[in-house]
Image (tube, rainbow over all chains, first blue to last red; front, top):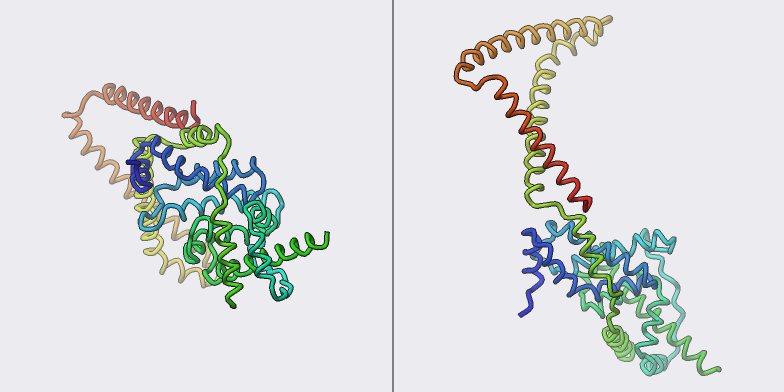
Length: 186
Length: 155
């Protein structure tokens, strides 16, 4: 039977560095995919993921086993990605909620949206969103975290997380509608 | 929120949940483990460093306590002098006199300590044996600290 995260973390804390390879095996794809979808650059995503794992190893003694290990690790990955975005002069609006204006959607749009949600399109739509929005969507739906857990990961109030989730979904719907209308006119 | 909107939200959630995880390049794990090996200090070295840090902190705290007591004991006299005209000079003179008194007391304490030491010296090893032991200890401590630094640098 495979060792649990808690056992692996305990072994690491006792000085067994090889146990971290187990943690790496469990999380490398998840953390790398998260970074890739935020940074949209494989090299930058690998750098950020590597930095996150090394920082996590260094800070293992500060991990509280009462909380999920995944959200603790994703918090470190979030910080690494935000640092990478800032270093690349990409806009990361952290000071205030800079919500874009959303146009009204016409009736019947929901059916149109429902028809066109394939993996490729949703991936492209996520990539077109500002990182603050794609991040909450990924954490909520791909990583199956609740608003409270996401709030701990991104270091924002729970209300902000819920607002960002709502806006992110609305943005996706608007963009998807625009794509469909464009397809229909061509 | 109407039913259609809820349905679309569920579809968006489902589509994102079904996104595949991407795999980093082949050498990723090895690079991370190499980074960790370079970072990780030896557990015994961490213990030694923590112990040394604790001793330094305790010593600094004791020193701060003694200094604070000295300042507190002399504060009433010096503060009263400072508010008078030309009081600064008088306060400095007073502090110098107090310092001379403390030095004289320290001298007495030191000579008493030397007397006690010389009385106890009969049972101590010869001075050159103590010097050799001190030199060996210093060399061992220096070697350990260099070893730790090199280990951290991956040398």
